[in-house]
Length: 312
Image (cartoon, rainbow, N blue to C red; front, side, top):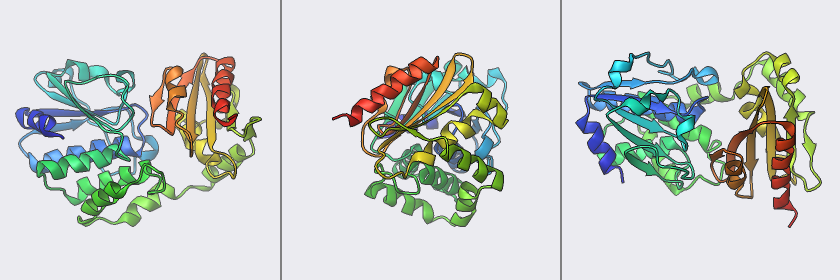
């Protein structure tokens, strides 16, 4: 499956790894994991990871991004991970590379790279990178395995989401043959300071419901500014305060971050809601996706589209 991408890796002395902006655990895990994997197996190659800051995932070993000059892209291979749309790739210089490759598990929206493997059957991009390593005969190290396992855990919801399969556990087992402490991962991922717990409690009290039991939270810009935190913490970070409510199978979080831009995070335990995100210029997975809308009226129109799933 990865033969053509592996040939590109072998053919280039410089490899620059990209992923989507505002990275989650899977984006960073796949990026850091692939970087370590390639450096371990091709010590003579120059391998870089670029993009915006890791923020809440900065605990991951190797999360500090490389700062490189534009000229490094000359003759290089740019590898794009965990990204379904060109507009979402962090650091646009990937376009100047000599060759490009993409590994992704989102629903296909557009061709981005010269060579691509896009497979939605994987629970995570980290799972795909692990498959790439095994198929290509590359040796995993504790550092590469730990990063890949971290992304696998986060994108599968600790192996709870229905994207988890027997293949997920096969690949996780291969990673765990390397010696790393899973407690180091879980303690960082799921331990919160008290201020974060209080913030989550405030958002629980903000939950509203449509007539057809779609749960939603709407945060106006003035309120968002009052929290004095980053958009990720409020938008993606708070969407799953609604995830385990009995009788709720669709939930959505709206966050006004600036004039004319409302971040939208959509989740479902039952329905394929990704077409709604695509309708409003976004994308993602079948049951976990997002987009941005320009004003509250458009946000409420999107909410009505989600409501329609439960009218039947």
